[in-house]
Amino acid sequence: MISASLVKELREKTGAGMLDCKKALEANDGNIDAAVDWLREKGISKAAKKADRIAAEGVAEIKISGNNAVILEMNSETDFVAKNDEFKELVNNVLDAILAGNPETLEDALALSVNGKTVEEMIASKTATIGEKLSFRRFTKLTKKESEAFGSYIHMGGKIAVLTLVDQASVEVAKDVAMHAAAMRPTCVRRDQVPAEDVKREETVLKEQAMNEGKPAEIAEKMVQGRINKFYKEICLEEQPFVKDGDITVGTYVKNNGGTIVNMIRYEVGEGMEKREENFAEEVMNQIK
Image (cartoon, rainbow, N blue to C red; front, side):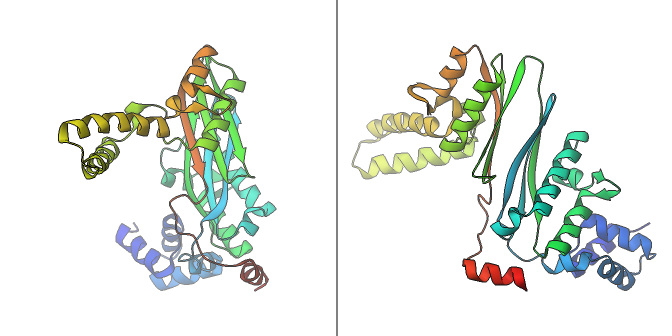
């Protein structure tokens, strides 16, 4: 039996994935030095050497099959590699694996098997052959009812991907909502999905602003409520003015077409991640090395 602490130690030594470390230790009766060599022989240590690099480029992609849909973000170090056919094939294989399985977490998804290899092994193998750090950042899998429809939109070749789910409305309506979300960056569908701490923080900032304007506390409180409503309209999909008709909200547009918005997932590649600063010439030289 290989202990979790031994797996952890090998991960820290090599930077290889948890499943790879466990497999290496099992193949070498728990001998950590032999396991290191085993990982090197498999080419996984080459992937490990790249573990501290920044991978903030890549693609956000969607695949729909029947009543199931998956949206994911897969990262690379450069946009050059994100357009590589091998990278695209990897993304497609991962999408297929998730559609075929029922992973709930990223760890579950990495453990899925494709043609005798886990997703984690596939990524490590491609990292070794392509020569850049690749990483699987996130995914969401949705399953729809018969009365529901998926909408999907990919912008700029995969820089932004939006997956929507509407009830009692058409695929065309769902796609319109997805295109709107790509452009207008909503963070949630409706008010009750906005985290309470975000609202509280916004209220605190707005109240401070009103007080700094010299307003009495009572007036400041009323101003805050008005400005909070504006805050909701900026981030809630249902309340945003619809890009194709600014006289109505997105929620009204869907309602006018007989439906309601059930869900919306929007991925923008690299959002919230540290970006590496590198010019194009250096990027090309890195590809040649």
